[in-house]
Amino acid sequence: MLGIEDKGVLLVYLLCIGSSALCVLYGIIARNRGDEPIKPEDVKWVTEEEKADKEL
Image 1: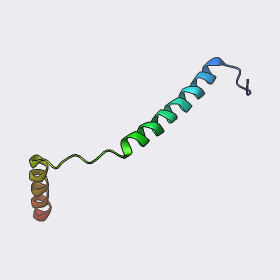
Image 2: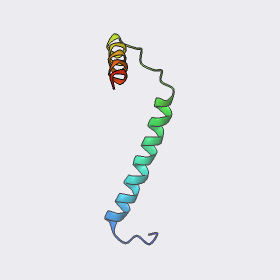
Image 3: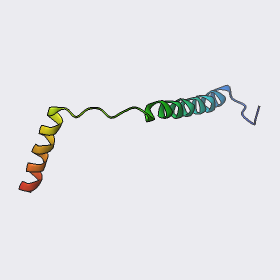
Image 4: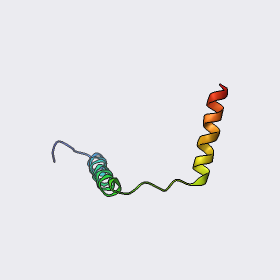
């Protein structure tokens, strides 16, 4: 069958194609999600990083 004699090799090919299809499907679904809201911890982290960059 298509030059593939071993069933294990065929299984690996099918699993690779299946996982690729699932990745594409997930990408299509997740693409339109909105961004997460900015949390106060994020703002604090950014200000600390900017201070550290200025000290360098």
